[in-house]
Length: 136
Ligand SMILES: [Zn+2]
Ligand SMILES: [Zn+2]
Figure 1 (cartoon, rainbow, N blue to C red):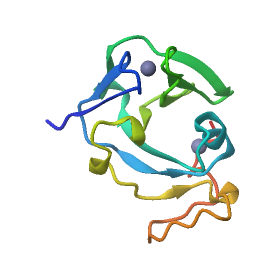
Figure 2: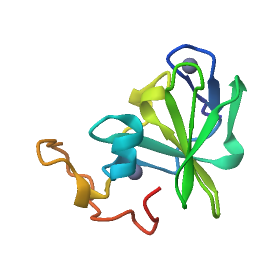
Figure 3: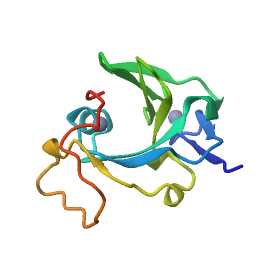
Figure 4: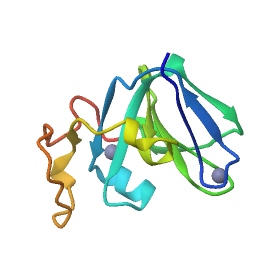
């Protein structure tokens, strides 16, 4: 079984995903930009049943009617996004993984709000919106 471990910057929150990601990519939506303070968020989506926290309890912030961000209440590291309706997957922030190189992106979402100076030279599919999801 493949296991992806990770945690926050201060180490109070630890998590594990015991599966390969079902999806992964860059999200250029404004909510991901705002909640991370970064120009783009790299995410990897794991099945809900395969993801759990092994240390600490995350704080939650409803970033939109569609879903919530989970983050460390001590250091503020954002760990994951969870949809409110039909939460089959947990979107984990790839930067929080112990081995982010193992979860490369496979597409771009919400390129309609990509910051123009951010150029990523790859051939992954680009979606103007969220591939079916509302911005979360
Ligand atoms: Zn922390
Ligand atoms: Zn986003």
